[in-house]
Amino acid sequence: MAFLPDVFGQALNGLAYGVLLFLLSVGLTLIFGMLDVVNLAHGSYYMLGAYAGLTLIAVTGNFWLALLVAPAAVALIGAGIERTCLRPLYRRGPLDQVLLTFGLIYVFEDLVKWIWSGRIRSIPTPALFSGSVTVFGATIPSYRLFVIVFGLAIAVAVWALIEKTRLGAIIRAGVFDSEMTAGMGINIDRVFTGVFAFGAALAGLSGVIAGPIQSAYPPMGASILVPALIVVVVGGLGSLKGSLAGSLIIGQAETFGKVWLPGASMLMIYVVMALILLFRPQGLFGRALK
Amino acid sequence: MIPRALGFAALVAIVAAFPLFAGNYPVKLLQEILIWGIFAMSLDLLMGYAGMVSFGHSAFFGIGGYVAALALVKSSGLVSALLLPALAAAAAALVIGFFSIRVSGVYFIMLTLAFSQMFYAVAFQAAWLGAEDGLVGVPRPSVLGWSPASPAAFHAYLLVIVALSTLFLWRIVRSPFGHVLRGIHDNEGRMQAVGYPVNRYKLLAFVIGGTVAGVAGSLYAQLVGSISPDAFLWTTSGEALLMVIIGGTGTLGGSMLGAAAFILLQSMVSSYTERWMLILGLTFVLLVLFAPGGILGVLRGRVGIRS
Image (tube, rainbow over all chains, first blue to last red; front, side, top):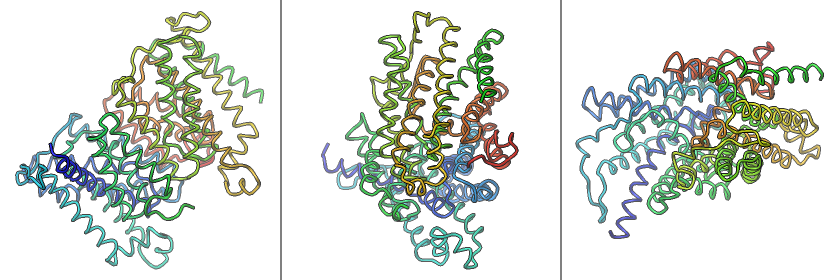
């Protein structure tokens, strides 16, 4: 096996994973920045996306339809949760939010077990991308290339939405100072719900496209949360750029850890995080700590 | 003061006598409650008193469990069962605390969570720690020649350790040290300005909490007879956190009550239906929405003792 193509292939795998992490961490970081809520149940939307995708594909046989409808369904669930459960908590301390969102993890995980049974299910790879391609001597499943291209396209779209549109300006203002934003006559309640639903939809989307790579199993939501939170911390809370940089770094760390240090691969992302926080405690793009 | 002491003595007596009139399963549940209770109390020392919401308390629980499992196989005395696990947890807490207390709020939550997940990663992949199966066949200690095989002896031993840990924590929160911690919780900047070395106080609280959590983990390994990487998982910290919040933060008795509520609810619901996670989760959600301040908060008819 040649060294360079191998490294290149791994880098692409890491990129695919990083893109998935980005879709998850955008929601986490926006929800934290704006609503001041550490949403421990964010991984649940990833899980719900995967299972909704699974069912939609089983019923319609169409992966692309699932890619569109599942995130929309997850967004609706997210909006409902924000309205009913989180809204009463905004003025309370972080403890109540921790308790509530932790409880939601249990609720969602058990509902998924109830509806879909607890066994591991795989989401079939869409026929269009079932083969593999050779890029610079490295053989890559073409589905991974699709994930990279699609994910990066979504990342650019999210960035353009938040940085270039009026709606994005409102969201950024809300993240910076939600009270002031409300004072400017913006219906901040509706923006909160929208941002939460948007974050949930991206997490759901991430679940659908991760399905053919990682399969679906009930505790997947709780386990993906840790790397997603690490991305947010490494990148800097509330920062979109940080989310992107953090995802790419953690994606590579995890993938190369698996290849080069199989005995300690799970440690890699923590080592990387510790190193970054040692030099920048507020994260790569975070505002200075209070 | 005296009624409190009498109440505590009465409680200890009831718990001690419990195996006389209850079957094996209720006794095991009670023992689990006691162990999780001191684990939750040790977390409450950080959360409720010093205002540090740690999501990595499972690190010390797991370390206590693993060290006890490794040491008890070699020799069955109290050194293996308590001293080594407590020291190991204290040492880990010193290191983790040193790095974590420099940040606050969500960063503190995240950093502590990441530290405990690091231990999970190590335990999960290290062959000498049994990898994902963990260590099984942990022997119970023999104390002053008492037979480790006798359930009565183990119950007595457990009760003594739990009672001592409770008194220890209670003594701490009532001491001048404990009052400084409350002061830090209420207004860190002011305590700093008045001249308290805030970080040293926080670190000491972190180490004390970690040490007691290590003892809890060790007792847990002795009770169950095994310890697995799951002990380190962030959800283990989350469960302890729930117990503290359910009981009401800033009250040691509340933490024990919260542990009892959590474990009894889990065991009752799971004996009726497979859907215990759903019911437990919904309970937490409803509790937050309609009973902020936890069980004690509701019992005392006011909202949030210190939240």
